[in-house]
Every structure is written in structure tokens, then in C-alpha cells.
Length: 483
Length: 135
Image 1: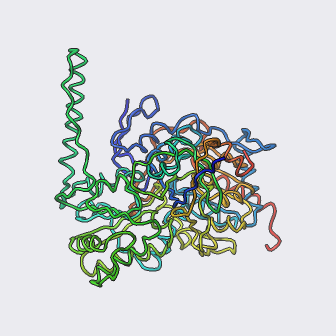
Image 2: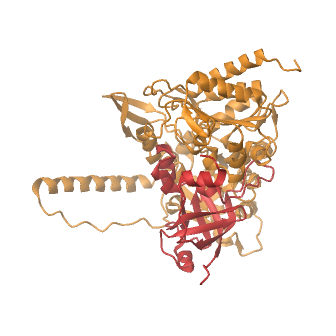
Image 3: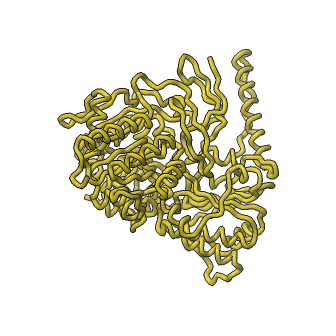
């Protein structure tokens, strides 16, 4: 039995790097410190849904094939396509994305990452307005006011609150929750001891104490937590202030806050369903803090207003910086979506939706973004790496994706792989392959190789390199007319 | 025959912890289907529809309609708002329009819900075959 410390979790944008894994006979048997999703990944990744052999579609059915045959077929599809799309990249390493960019340039395709349906509008807006940001470590140690807007970390980034905000204790910030959590832990231990006594001595257990539920909002010492959301999520339940904004009204609420922060009067009683007095109280709290942080989620980017919502949020933080110190950060979803943007930026100049069809990188989201290309039915082949658009894109976009040749590189048999023409099984980055990933605050962290992948299963980077070299071979054989 | 009540609502899609756990396990798994082929509805709205929890409902928008299982929302109150976790079932009814931003409308879409006890929730394989005629 072997224990590995300081493992980086390859699940969400938090990239928690304090995971402890126990390995027995080449298998992960125990996960310490991780959240539910982290445990599900480390303990359950190698199951019956794993693809173990390359697959190819013959007579409408996916059948097993050799790696060489699959590479030849995939390279043939990509080399012949006029306007192929290369999409995914948020759940693989920066090293793999780098090869992806090279491949996109070679075949004159469009390379786009999952940011397009996540924080793509945030990126557009950051390019418009600018961003005052910081690292998560600074927030943990210094932030005395935390705002989550349109984001539910409890479900999407389960350890964000514990590691960086309300539940964490920093050098200069105390957490009022620490005592409460210690009590909960102590009571769990007490219950375990009681249950052991019961089992050993067959005695009747002492009657259980009535459990005290958490009040929906509680005022406590230490840093304050504000949650703005359309639903009373679990994150909202632990907040000091919860603002339940009406759906699609985030923009006007943000602008109302901007007015209040600038000491302007608001002539209505309610904004987005919230009484103005309540907003004044919250705005006052924001102005009075020493260091505030606004985390925003896809609640802002996916609803009405899209990038305009983010313009307003960034501007609110800019306004707040005239009164105090405030930072803002998008809650990035997949573990390396930030890395995909970063690699794309340093290689091509643009973070996503990069079109190489003219031979040089061009960036015009709305035209060169994968979603629009699919909706306008422009692409004629696709390569999907470590992503599942069939499960996450609107059906009109999926319809065009699956009507054209589709190549998938993924460890699991997901809905996109089920629809594919060529499927490559790949190793899990961060479990079976090392690499680099970027945390949501743009801090790069190393991903470790913990165990070996199944026999014959290669990492994304290696599969892409082989496809690229085959594409070059095919192009040399058949020089284009222009050349 | 009595006509089914149709309830106008606002549709939200998003992440749930169950969906997060199930997707890591595998999207062909039963757990994944059970975590995403559902719709969280406010208890008040369930009453208006005259249905109990776990009944099948038909959710329709301008872009399509899908049968999913209604669940009583624990994150109340949100009368007039329904929530479907991200996944192939939600994809059928979301608004693909990007307005030149690359991002479709995945939250805050006008929709209608009606009881559909006689219609089954399609499995992932059936749903993909029905939507895209490919398996």
C-alpha cells in the first residue's frame, strides 16, 4: 500500500492540490480531502464505461479496430476537410492543447474550447472592460467580503467555500464557521463512539439530541458572504445576505448597484424583484469592506444580456475600487479550461474561437465560434478532444455535428463518442498521465501520473501527435494545387 | 376528455452535484440518466399541475419538447421557474440563438410544462436516436 500526497484534482477549476490517494495493487482505493465529485472521479474512473480499443464506424455500427487504422482514418478525414472544427480541450493538459493548436494550423481548421459555452462572454467582456483580479490565496488570507453571483459553488465547485472563502481561515481573516464545523465534527465522532459502545455492550443508546438546522441567513463575525442567484441554492443558505434576483434581470440589478455605489438615488421601490432598501444595505456593506471579491458564474453568461451582464459586473467592481479594494473572478468550470484559453492565447494571440482557414489566426466569436459554425452548418468534419458536445450543446448544433464525420478522443463512452465515426480511447490526465493545468485564478499546477493507463491506451497528447504526423504525411503525398 | 393543464414557466439549466458525480462515473450509466432526465419544480407549481413528485411531465419551448420526470424542488421558493440539469434532455428545449456571441441561451428560457403520465422518459440511447437518427 502506498500513499501519494499533494495530488492535484482534475475535476473543476478549483484544482485542489491537497488530495491524498492510497494506491493498492496499481489501483486507487482511498481518497482523502476530496469532494464528492473528486472521489467519484478517482474511485470510479476505471469502470465498464471505459473505452479500451480504438473504434471505427462500419455499416452504421462502431467496431473495434487497430490504432494504426484509426489514425489513418482520422488523419484522412481531417486532411480532406475544408472547414474542420477542433473542439474540447478543457479536460486535458496544456501540453495536449498545444499539439491541438499545431494540428488546427496544419489543416486550416477552427480550434475552439468549451469556454465558448461557459465563460466565453466573460472573456469578450474582459477584453472590452478589463479586469481587476488576484489569486485565490490572496482571497483566502485577506478578503473580508465575498460575493457569489450567478454561481453555486456548493454544487459546481464543492470545495471553493471551504478552501478560499467563507469556511476557510486565512492569515488575516477568521472564519466564524470554523467553530461550528468543529462542533459538527465532534458530534459526528461522539455519535460514532456511541454506536461502537452500543455494538460492543448491546446497551440501549442514549436518546438522540434533536438536531439543530442552520438558519437560512445568519449574521456572524468575520468575513461576510453575499449570494445573488435566481434560486435559493445550498450556497445561498449559508450566506449572510441572499438576493434572489428574478431570472434575466441580473443586468439591471448590477447597474442598480453601480448607481448605489456612486451615491446616486434610485427612483423605484424594487429592482429585479428586490426592495431598494435591501440593496442599499448590501451596497453599503460592499463599500465598507477592506477587500472584497466578486465571483461570478455562468448564471450571468448564459442568461439574457450574456456579455453585457459581465460588462456591468466588471464595471461595478471598477466603481467599487474608487471606494475600497475589490477584485472579480469568473468561476471557471472544467479543471483546465483556463489552461486551454492560456495556451490558445500564447500560441495564436486569441483565447478561443480561433480560425486558421485563411492560413493565419483569426478571431471573431459569433462567426468563428464552434456554436455558430455548427448552427450555420459551415463545418464539414470535427475532432472532439476530452469533451462531450452531444450532451451539452443545443440539439440544432448537435444535429450538424453528427451529420458530418466526427472523430472523438475520450477515455469514456460518452454520448459524443457513441455518435462518432472514429473513437480513440485516451488516458485520464491527472490520473494516468502527467501534465499542466491552470487554476481559475491563472495559477499553473502540475497534474500527477498516479497509476498506469490500461494496456495500449495512449494520452491525448500522443494520439494528437500521431494524427498530426499522419496528416503531414498525407499532405506531402498529395500536394495541393495552390502549392 | 379533460385537457391537461399547461403551466407557463421560465426554464433554467445548470449543474447539480448529482450530475457532477454521475458524469465522472460515466455518461452511459444509469446514475447519469437519473441525475439529468429530471426537472425540479416548485411544490406550488406541482399542485397547479395536479401531479405528485416523480410523475412524468412534458416540457416544451419554441425549440422542442421533452418528457422528463418531475421532482419537488428543495431550493424553494421559485414559483414559475423550473430547473433541468445540463444534459441531453435539457438540450432538446434550450434556445440555440447566440446573438453573435458564441453562447446560446441556456438559462431563462420561456417554457411550458404539462403532465404527461402516459408518455415515457426516453433512455439516453432512445433519445439520441429520436433526435439525431444515429446510434
